[in-house]
Image (cartoon, rainbow, N blue to C red):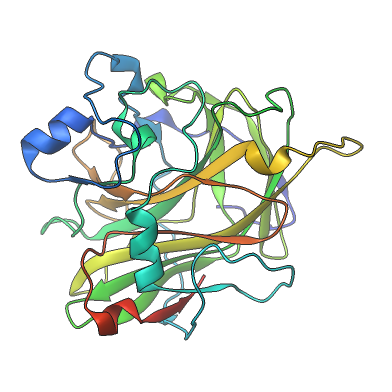
Length: 312
């Protein structure tokens, strides 16, 4: 997305290429989704049309590098202070999908499915789709004490793995820069706001707005032959503005990962027909230490698959 990773860009995302995110009632009625780990309710948000979450996502056609998944052994969301990549297992990622959000996003009605719990809509790719992307969002948490604080987030090591029927993982997205934009918490009307992103040394940095959602993503990638499920992972940490001492910063913003299937590498968004939601994961608090976040569409893995390690 950025010709120079040291360049700072003001990014306004094209609203024509928004993400598909269904309502809870239509997910269940269609039989194509699974809502996991209900968090205090799971009613339809059909009465909240602005929360249908047409979330903008750039339809970039840049291919990401691919390589075999690396070994790892520790659980997801392990904090660390070094620059070495954190590590997790498929079992830990699946467990995250079965847990309630640590907090709900501020400004999103309770009836919105993805705001209530992790959701799977299309765990496997549609037969005629050939591209995909992982993505993420950061929101201010309900009840956050620092609702006026514009904190800074740093993100690195965004990776997406594809798993085939044998349980083999292939790394399909692994790039050192991310694109994104600020949007309304409900993603209503695809309204976007200028966002200043800095990509340098493999780290993407931006300033968060407590009244907005920050939506981010790498370049789109092709779907490897035989793909059955996805794992999306990244690391992130948060810091208060310079000169601000805020002991509650660790309980202020929440991050979620997810993924979309796309009709092709160059398909433009066409009102929910050219990209389908694979699923959205668990909202977890950002902290001032580097932390691993995960999403997966894998369900009920065998013991050997659950033990499969990957680098976050």
